[in-house]
Image (cartoon, rainbow, N blue to C red; front, side, top):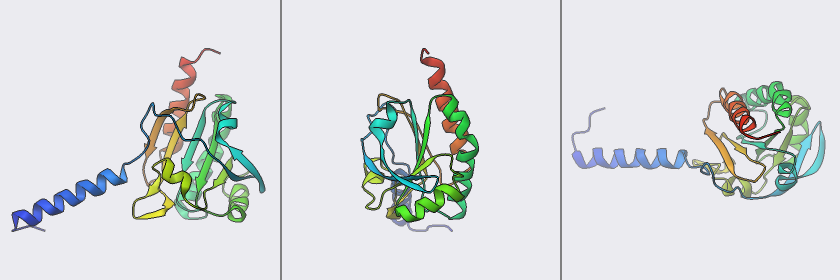
Amino acid sequence: MIFKNRRLCLCVAASLALVNSVALASLAVGQLTPDFTTEAALGGNAFKFSLADTLKKGPVVLYFYPKAFTSGCTIEAHNFAEATSKFNALGATVVGISNDNIETLKKFSVEACRDKFAVAADNNAHIMKMYDAALWIKPDMADRISYVISPEGKVLYVYSSLSPDQHVENTLQAVEKWRALVPR
């Protein structure tokens, strides 16, 4: 499509730049992460999840996903489930988070997460907003963003892509790099 009107072309370009900047919003590496406590599920059982308590055990891979039982989110959960033992061997905990209710997450934690890691409920979208992880076109739904958070509560790594394909690989590499720098 060719724009004959220079002003219209500039408006379209400015709009696309704004869309791209909104879509790429996330917490920055080195930034202190907001603490939160919420309901979560693991192996079909609900429990109270606290980020601060989990960080006492080591780094946390906190990944936001749009909706349980959708194709991309199920693929991503399967991928994280397959890699959970690698994360655990490095001292890291994996936690998924979405705007799904706890009853849905109980089922998702068994079927998609294969009882390997917890998934947390963000029913009001407060947590995703604190983490700049809300989907820009639907702010009550999470974007697909993965954070690696240090035990001190700082962002070590962030990866944002609507494709579920590289989240596990990239966050695992970030945890491996962190582990290599931390004395045992």
